[in-house]
Length: 198
Image (cartoon, rainbow, N blue to C red; front, side):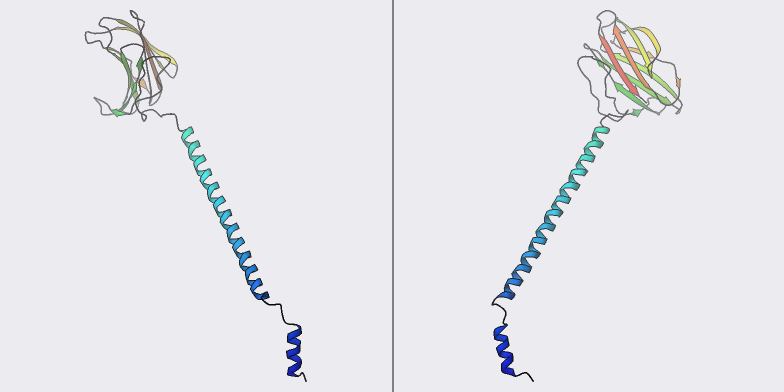
């Protein structure tokens, strides 16, 4: 039978060093703290990566959609002509039939202004009207109009007393097309452009 004194003596011999349990607790707490810090760093990194991906994708979408679709963009005009205007005005209601039409605001190289009006009639026919305003009265304009690159109208029109010139095409069968109109003032050499897509 083990004597109680032997147990006390064994306890003194094999007693654990002082504060060993405290050191164990501190080491465990330090390890847990380091794990929490590592988890926080990983979480922040994941959040930053997700934010970067979202902004990159949205900027790619903006770049891909930077072309203004027909009839939805703001109207812009320029003082000089270097090529066909790139922006088309918003769709508005047609004057007679109530059908929607597209107004392409053009540009002229001098003081005139131009626009191209596409009117959709009963959803199957398109009428094209090219207008020039603020032209010198009596000046003759050489007008050409194209649909999808094909010339369909070549005409000379004279500005009326109000300085307006208008050229109308026959009806086109179909619901869509890209139309371009160009006119040159035979007297002054002024050039006017306009285009629209429907």
